[in-house]
Image (tube, rainbow over all chains, first blue to last red):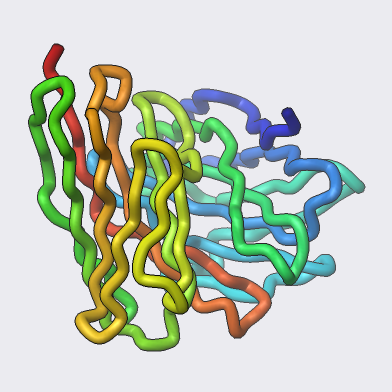
Length: 114
Length: 114
């Protein structure tokens, strides 16, 4: 069964450093998402991406964040200058077409900012 | 208005019992209500979903009940099993836009005792 994959599974970085989290969505999906989950809290929407542009973003997704689909398979989330409060689990999700609503989530990347 | 409120925060049920988790929303634009199951260290996985044109949907041991006038929906797990022990999140989205980002509840940690 096709699945969303994410790398790395765990990323440790120093405060102020840039990190790039990578995702490979399900191959025929057209809509892509990033969510984050701070330890013990609910899953929060960050950004959605369709047709090579951001379609929606939350107030969490400030200028420190950016997303990119550099090729036909990868979808990345970049945090330019990490803060301690960026420590969280980051989930990538993908959805097939405009007529479906099911989002499939990857296993997540645990980001630890020291 | 974007919030989805979920209760209880934690739930302990004996094997064979019924687990009930409740959610409430305020945004009347929401028209898609999925439930996700999350095991430790894993991403959320879609369990079952409902739209407001039906009041109940059943898939195996899992049933969603939906009350449109009260803006509430609930997950019932019949014959609960130890393997059902996980965190359950309700979510909601509006399907009118292309983004369809999910707004999650705060989660319920379910423990089913053997």
